[in-house]
Length: 102
Image 1 (tube, rainbow, N blue to C red):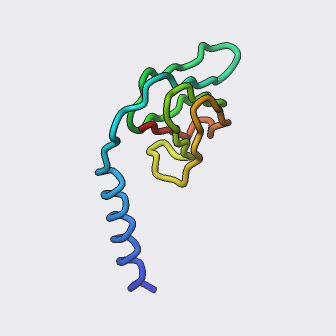
Image 2: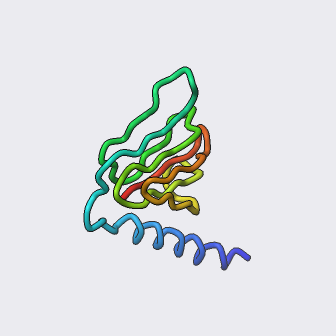
């Protein structure tokens, strides 16, 4: 069983390095808007690019950009993700999630 751990860890590190090395052809233009609670203003990300940790109170993400936005359940954009199309929204993981836009 120990023999399997090293190759799996190496494979995970390699896939992470390859994924982080990719550069999008163009950055998204527009806004990503995150709603938290009724007693605080929404958080707006203008022309987002790369990984962004969501605010602690995040509840809903609205994609007002010209490209898809990936929503993650972890703060580093590493877990499996959900793609939110332009003009659509999604509930998000409060306090622990993140999103990335290309």
